Image (cartoon, rainbow, N blue to C red; front, side, top):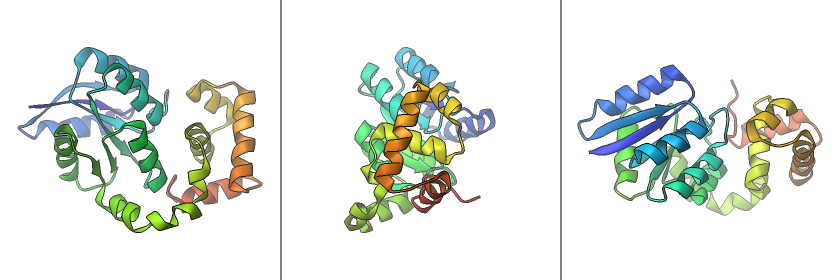
Length: 211
């Protein structure tokens, strides 16, 4: 039996994920978390084989949650669930230690298969993203997002989501001056001059969706 911890801050989404996984005879959900810190604590206590982790939890960024979980339970397999159809995000998460990356909106049958794959020691990346990672590898140098550090990418994403500096300081545990410094670095690295350009760049590279 594959044991799973589900971490997503949206109660209805979380309930749907739990129902989908529990409908498979070989998968058992041990618990549910709505925050990153809660996921780290529950993972330490429950010791699941797989953590299904939403990238955008409100208190801690998904990359950080991944690193914290692996620091207390290195053997756990982390499967990231996200809205970000971003090749760069997928690469960052795999580098952080995640075992898989699945985009919300994938076919329901894909999730149990992804859980089984990572539980058995493999790596799972959503089919459409895997194709892009293989065929677009030669264009990586043309993607300015790849020049950002992990923390700069986190701040970039928050700004692209329309967050104010006050919200970003609360969510990432940074001071306003530090967020301002990251913002200046991001603008310099990406050669942009305003938030409108940042927003367009985020849409172009799959960090956010054009709604």
